Amino acid sequence: TADEVRQRYETDIEQHTRPAQVRLALLFLGSSKRDGEGARESVRMKMEEARQLARELPEKTSGFGALAMTHSEEATSRFKGGDVGWMRGGDTQYRWPDEVVAEAFALAETGAVSGVIETGNGFYLLKKMDGREAVVRPLDDHLKAAVKSSLLREKRAVASAEITTGWEESVATTVYPDVLDQLRFLPASERPRSRETFSSMP
Image (cartoon, rainbow, N blue to C red; front, side, top):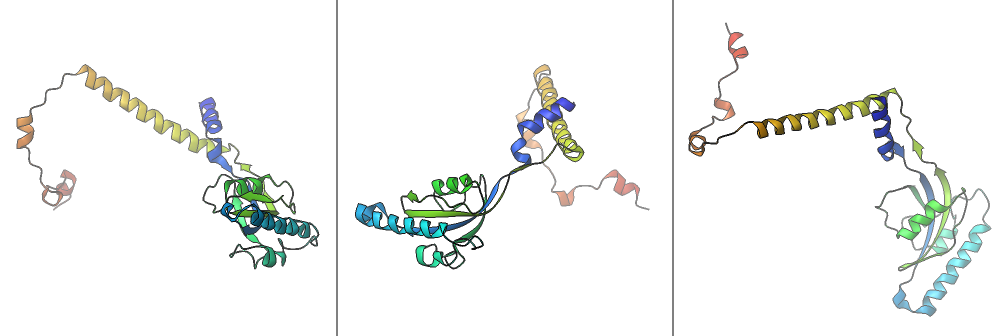
């Protein structure tokens, strides 16, 4: 029914949603907790300096601009203004710590710069270069037909299972192992052709 189609659509709404995306510029300075508080604080201050410089960059600067070459150890992006490309909400394959990914999607406006993010392996600074909102596909006629088809397949499978179970429970079955052991099945290449095949022969 139309109500069942709507209910399934709403239940599976994530499957019909294109996640939010963000294009990110990133600075990274490594520092392990084994380095000691003094060493880590020195790295933190350098990243704080980078944050201040980033907030003073011209508006049209791509990412962090030349700042990425002097204040980042992220090898794949430091010569591209820190640009690490697009990230999709919900993906888990990123090589950056969870708190960095979470902050990336928390940046509200294009051009916004995060605070310094401390992690176990160092310090990060992020800049939002662009963003795309999550988009939900509407329940149009094509999607209604697909959802209805899926529901029908499920209902047929349930009905078939119920019928089979009913037969098994209502009909006594006797198995003769000695007869089964004597059965021999020809390989496919040696089986007779179908009646249709023979009837078409001259």
